[in-house]
Image 1 (cartoon, rainbow, N blue to C red):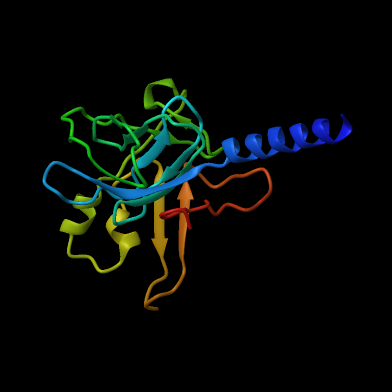
Image 2: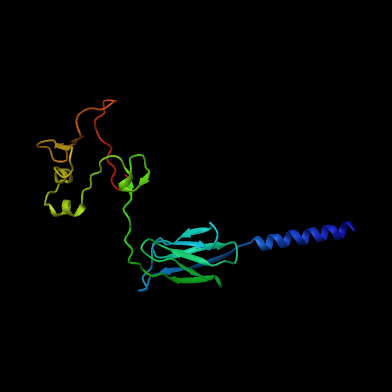
Length: 183
């Protein structure tokens, strides 16, 4: 009897292990014109299991269940497909919906521009590029209220001084932190 119970337990455990194994599905996400959709999100329907496509729209995901795949991307409509086989090539349609503006504050919190209780100044990059000034700081001069940019005279490439709304601070360091493209 003990041997039968042990055999039965081993069969049950091997069945559970075989059932818990997932299958890997690969494929490509493309738009209506056949161009790849870079960095699209591919998720298993009804779960939190997800991955992101690469710059060429290629993805690889391990499915834990037998559900379908949902493909989403900014500016595209969501598409859900059955995951039959190990290769799924999806086509998602572009939408005409306008993307909303997101403001990232100094604390790194994303907020809508309407909910922020302080002044925000934006500089359109096309107006800076239209100016024939080779120095970026000189082209920013006069574009944002309360910002005073003073460049060192006579020395090309010398450090500039940027003041925002006056000359005081709590700790004596009056230089603002400037972050361009996350650096």
